[in-house]
Amino acid sequence: MIFAFVEDGTISVLADDEAARREFEPIDVERNAVVFYAEDGTWLEPRFTEPNRRSLFGLMLHQGRFELVPRPDAKADDVDSVQVALAGARHVDPNPHFDTVEAIARHIDGSRRGRQ
Image (cartoon, rainbow, N blue to C red; front, side, top):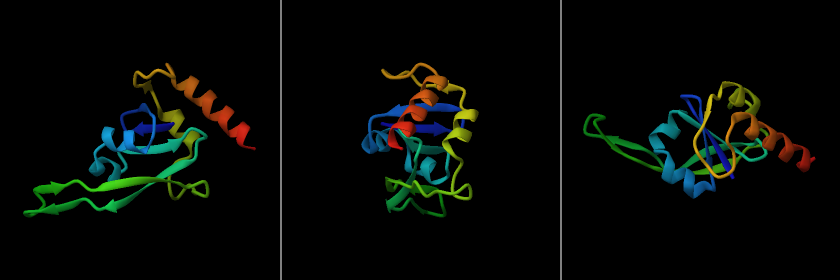
């Protein structure tokens, strides 16, 4: 399970990397309009296997392709912690697992405790 934190304060709950690629445009991922975390709160760094390319004086965009790579060693310089992301979240997109930001926070906390 992947949590996608969108810049407007929405959290999307996604099944896997492929769902993330279907749901979010690579250009938005590249500009950090969406940040991904695993269900234990580990940052998932988007790595572009095919970069976004602009042509025709920047007017045409060819969307690239990305994969999400777990970065448990991420520092504050890299990305906000999942706790900071949760504090800025206001809404959860409809999904079969979680109704509220608080429910997601409890799930992440439980996943972290189970990992220790």
